[in-house]
Image 1 (cartoon, rainbow, N blue to C red):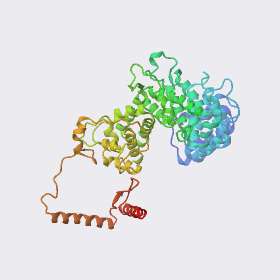
Image 2: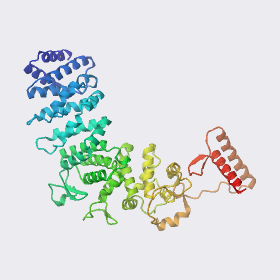
Image 3: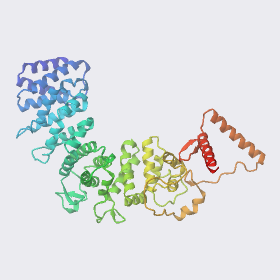
Image 4: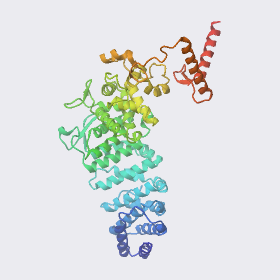
Length: 545
């Protein structure tokens, strides 16, 4: 094979365009499915890469340009041989063929779309695999050329592939370069531009201030019951991923009225994505996943658009509010719970989104509580035992992953209006202890959230069983025999002192550390708490004197 590579190198070095075309086409045909490369040919592949880039700088026929670009695309799969393609000159050459070189205007009036697509594929490979190419691409301001073409997104000249790889390359730059992400978000007004591009991709029309439907369909399909076309779905998901990158800090900072209006506009489009189906269940799930990730970046004040559409026939309605979007989020979360795979990545975005929505919107919280924490009837089983949403979420409260554990507990705590007694009632004190300790609520009370004062209604079953419920396990426990029954007072005292001595020994040997709830409601070492109480008591006594 090394001999064949040297022969191709020799042919390209002659500069004969026709001979080079034949040699490169043969190489491309043979290697089109090649993704692993021989280590002993690295030097030859680097040399071929350098020559092809130089050849591409000449005035070539489109077929020869295409062959050179295909060769670069194949060679750029090898992460060890990227140097020839990551130089400033090579990146400029590829950007020019892709029609995105900043400051050079757009492609010719009748561009060769195959050449543009192939050049974009090359840039995607190189940027993905080479930090050096990422830096050069940022210096060349390729994101400016990409956004200029995105402004002409609806021009019928551009095919699906040109649009898709424009978006893919934009995603890679914004994912891998913080400076490019910031440039697109602020200097190039990326959120507004990409919202418009997403709207065009989905072919939407505005039905109301914060409600959209599909433009080419009749009113019967404004709910997105017909699946989105495959190509439009692919492009929409790339746009959602880019928007996720450029809005990453939006929910963590204050936004002005203009930004809030922009995010609400985007939120209405995202609601449509959430209510839409793609071609097949897996593709629908992927679309919804990207949508939910992005919704989680939006400022909390803008999530009200999820509830904006009027209640229609077939809508999920609660307290006069359209809960279709919230219901989809809940179903999505339930499916991810059942899957139980990579919960931190797959579950926490939807769980966090539902938590924050419930925190700021009373109707959403009450609807979710009705679904997740209905009036308690089953008090015979532990809260974590069973197949209901409550059972599944309580099981997560002792999950090995801290983030998953925290998200599940926080969601249920918010649904309980951050009331410790209500939270313990539905989860059991043993499951609730982690969150309560972190919040300084071990001794009871309420969190810092502001909620309405509606009462928690108990079922008859719960009221009857309440005196016999073990608050630690959250269920009615069978009464165990008293181990001290039949003992004399001396025997009881002996057993008690024996137990004290065992704990004392374990404590002195630092096998265990006795804890108590401190004045701040958090767990602390018993010795420290006692010291604080003595100090506080002596301080009070001196003040009385």
